[in-house]
Length: 502
Image 1 (cartoon, one colour):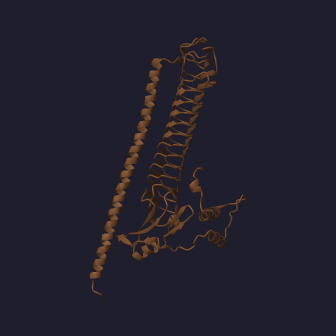
Image 2 (image 1 turned 120 degrees about the vertical axis):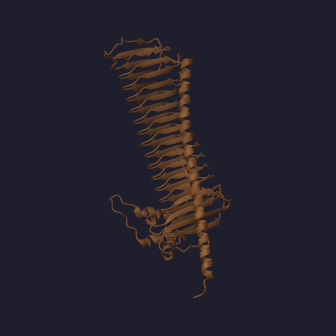
């Protein structure tokens, strides 16, 4: 089945709406904006069967106005029976959206409008211009909330939605956070300014925010998450993962598919991945657990730690160390300033030509004693640095003290095989056999890497817990404020009824 297939099957009405948006902003290649006439737009909308007016049907109920001082509040409610597994396409020009699992076969939405105004007439004038529009589509429900003046509206708006647990969501807001609880279905979220948080979701997930963080639970399918400025944290993913942010850390659990993780400034931490991995940051560390395929890791400033990989490993940093363990195939690694540790655990069938290079730093390689390989090691400026090896290879004359010169070693191990180039401009080169002591040291390093990931993940979980507690506290405070407003409205009504008629 095609990815996001259910969400992609929009009705004629939805396509018309999105088409109007695109055409209104479209520019031809010469740079001249296409001018779309209002009559043509209305004709297109009418042809799609979309009502033009703001009239609200009987499914939408407006509550009474309530106030406390200058703060005025009104609730607009909508509810309707829907089949489980349907699609909700929701669009809002402003406001946060919160979706929680509710009763089977029932869709409910409460829009809470808040406004500071000097009088009831002023508040009512703004509230009455808020339009909630609901239409049935072939796949489910289309729901929109439009406030006066759009994003410049004085309204403070929040949508509280409940859908069946088995449902599909396509949510858009031009300004606000989006929170989605547990969901058995597909999810797409777009917000122009706000955070996105979800519980566990069984279907594919696509999230975009122009200014906020992304926190996702465990995902039972593929994930695409994009942020223009914020962290991306996600649990285990049962499919491919594309995680991109312009500023912030990327933290993910076990990923069963391909991985593309990219940030312009922050760390990248992935617990494990079964498919090929591409990880890139312009400023931060990269920590990768066991990877079942190839790995490409690049950072402009930071270290790279890899617990293991079955495929080709390419690692590059402009400033930091490289710790590359359990390499079962070829490796090409480079650092401009820092040490390199590489444990090659390949077989004669999987090992290929490899290279390790540091402009200023030591290189340490651990090899199985029986792996056929041809060694070529070079130190450009020795200045007291040396080539040390457990294997019977030829090492050229080495300078001692501060004397500078090239040091070279070359030879065949276990009869020779693919070429292993080791090159540092200034640093030691060690080529050691794998033994019990070395394996114990490596296990300690791997344990430290796992512990580091666990600490990061626990910190993330604690942040989410605190955030949920804050949200719960805010919800309780909002509920208490609503009850106080309702009580005050009842008291005012009773007082008014007791007054003698004029």
